[in-house]
Structures are given as structure tokens and as C-alpha cells.
Length: 412
Image 1: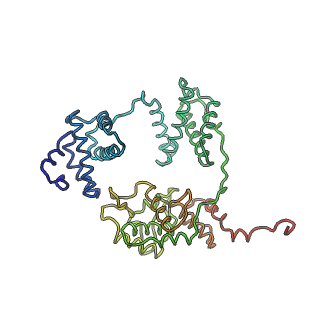
Image 2 (image 1 turned 60 degrees about the vertical axis):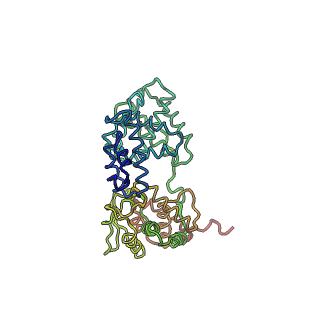
Image 3 (image 1 turned 90 degrees about the vertical axis):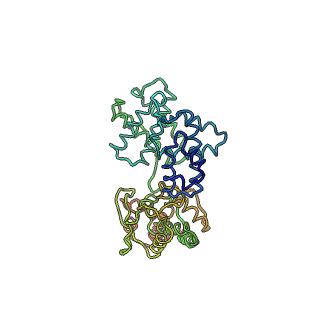
């Protein structure tokens, strides 16, 4: 497979020598399968070959230890080539993991690693938390442990006191700038302390003494855009490039259905029912599947994207990235970037919140403003409780004015 990228015999001989020489053809096939451009694949293969020569002089055909990788990365004096080498070695590890020895941190390096691993298992098996939520709670537990180890280095968690818990909470709150971050910080500490009691690591449930931070429901207004601005930004997207066609379909689907970022990324080709004009939304935030309507203009944009712009790769997912490796969006950031980019190009001034959820809020506000039944809006958005949807009623000023009571005593 290397012959697809390189033709000179001397170059091919050099590429197939070194510690990873026997894996270079597999790596070339890996880049070809992922849809990398020829020039990009050649750069990656050359970077891996340079490391292969370096490692070959140190370990020969033996598995490559992390120390060798670290030594190689230290040969770079600037960040840019080092970052490129790290990225290339990441591909080598994925294609040929058996050629690398994964360094497992010892308990001397991280004495809390076994405890945090048990905490993670508790969050997954007992609490049933999804991976993203689990990572946030684990980080909260790690921060609590770091504070405790720093302030009480010679003390066991078994003799943790209420005064120490309150001191740790006070420290975390001092670093939190918003009510949301304060609520999350105390919630994470509370969950970690419940785990210590559940696992028998402490004889008391100290979670009960963690104070609750004030957080009033419906106290804020949802960030939203004027509906005319949303459509102006969508209309400003051209159809001259494949990216334009895809991005227009993304924004139309978000703006007309109110689906979340993760729900958009999870949509598969078979989830679109073209005859009934519906999209089946899987694995929602509430862990309930639902169906959203597919408007005519949105359906036309999706059909145009599938027929003309979607990469010809074997993937069941609807929306794919155009940058290698070609495939579905793996996280929320690319979709958020698409939304921000297209809204800015449409002349929309953006605040701190500008992603798929901004279009969701804007649609909900528009529907409430059109006097659509609140339960209908809740069903479209996939809210379990209608109280969640009630947030958008606060911005329906014309409707609120109709139910406002007269000022006592008449006009001033």
C-alpha cells in the first residue's frame, strides 16, 4: 500500500525499516481508508518513519516503551513539529497497539488512582451516569481529593471531619464565578462523599452537611435570537461548495426541529422517513426516543446534501466531517463551530452562548410567541416536564401583558 504514496525504491526501503517498518503498509492503508489527502498521508507516514528509525536504534524489533517515545519528543526544540509528531504517533498507536508498551501509572505516582477508579465504577454501575456527566463528577472528586491531600497530607480519608469538608466546599465556592458552577461544585462533592459512605471508606454520610447553594429555577432568561436574524443567517449560506450545502442542512434542521447538538450527531440515514416527513431522534437527553417533523424546506436541504455533498464513505450517520478522518462528528465542538460561523457570516452579533442550543432556544421562543400550546412545544423539544418549557413563557411579553393585573389604586 505504500507504493500508492511513494514510488522511489530507496524511499520505500527506508520507510519499511526501523521499529515500525513492518507496520507501514498497514498505516498507509489506514490513512487511505480514512480519506486523507495524498499529501497529508505522506506527511504523516514520513513523521512515523522518522520515529521508526529513532526507535529502531534503541529497541530493535522489541515493543516500544513510553520512555523511547518521550526521548524522541524531547529531540524537538519547538512546539509545532513536536505536536505533529504526537499526532502521527497517535495514529501508529491506534493501528499497531501491540508494538507499544502502555505505561500504567503506579500507585506511587497517583495514590488516589484506585479510589477514583472505584468511584467511576460506582457512578456508572450504581448511579447510571452517562460518560460525559461521569467525567464532570469525577473531576469534582479529584479536586476534592487534591485539596484534602494538600491541606492534610498525612491524614486518611477515614477520619475526614465535617470541618474539613466545609473548608473544602468554601475553597471550591471561592473559585466559582456563576451560580451554575457553584451548584455543580457542591453537587460533585456531595456525590463523592456519598460514595465514601457507600463504599465503607467513611463511617458517616458527610454529604448531609454540604450546604446547598441558592439556585432558583426559571430565574434567568434563555439566550435567544430574533427569528428574522436566524433565517437571514440561513439564507446567507450559499450552495457553491460542499461545505455550504452541508452547513445549510445542519442549520435548517437545528432551527426547525430544536434538536440538541448530540441528537443531531446521532441521526442516521435510516432515521429519516421521507414519506411521512419525520425524523426519528435517538438517545435523547431524557433517554427517550422521539419523532420531530421534517419541514419541506429542511427536507429539500437534507436531500440536496445527501445526493450532492455527503462524502461517499461507509457510515450510517447523516452528517459527516469533510476533514480527515472523514466520518461522523465525535463531539459537540464541530457542530457548535458550524453554527457560530454561519451566524456570524449572516451578520448576527453573538454573545457567550452560541451553538446548537441557541437555535433551540430561539425556536422555542418563536413558537411560544406564536401562541402554540405549551405542551406541543414541550413535546417538540423532548421535555419530560412542562415546567421546563415554561421558561420560554417569560419572554412572551405580549401574552404576559394580557394576564397582568392592574396596579393597585389605579394609575399613578
